Image (tube, rainbow, N blue to C red; front, side, top):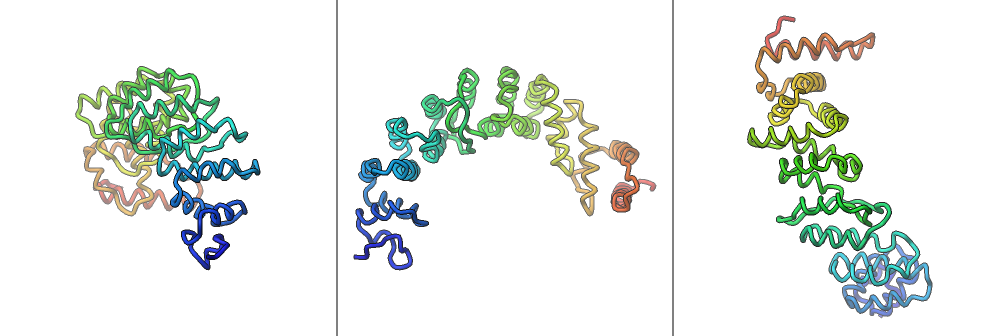
Length: 321
């Protein structure tokens, strides 16, 4: 049997015995991940004590973190138990963090209670990393957010898309929760991805009564947050959207929204049919307002861009140039 499983050009790792694989892992190799997976495939958790028994401290710390990551992909519950059991044996603050990312994702896909338990067991002074993940079909977002609002510490792995995912599933409930916890939302704006959450809410397809309630809830948040939300919508959009137009109307941002969308049309060759959402008389007024405030200056490129934009709109809407 070959005695060098690191030489993947000669033989695949699964053709070597366990001791040969473990010996090869003690030497730096580009194929270390493959060797690790091969040993786990063969021995499962029986390989774990052998890794923890490696004499070299630095190598033991490195390899155990790698093994724990691959264990977590297969058995997140046991991997988390091993992380808690051996965490104090290693000096690196981020030891096992790759495994915890897998554990956090698995917890979110299970239930809010599972994720809360994970966060309670991985408290830190500041988040080490953040992930976006899927959530269980019956995930209790309100319970999860209530826990975060009452907790005074960070966690080893933060869930970046928690609020946006809630806003996608239940826009009204997410908006009302934010209104009720506005101080927490302000303090935790970066972690919660608050802006993208608010955009999700105003862009959602909702019955009129629910939209009015959701928009009213967001309107009670601090004005700088509302301004930031609309500025991002103005920046990212290039045509009217029915849901956003309804929300903009309720929040008294309709004219600003339409102006921004019409100006963004300068990047297009023709106007989008979505402009049919806007009454003809209003479209003309919006055009006049944007046309009068767009100062092309002395730049030939800007002047040409504005003239092309004007021609496109006047032709499409039958406006006398």
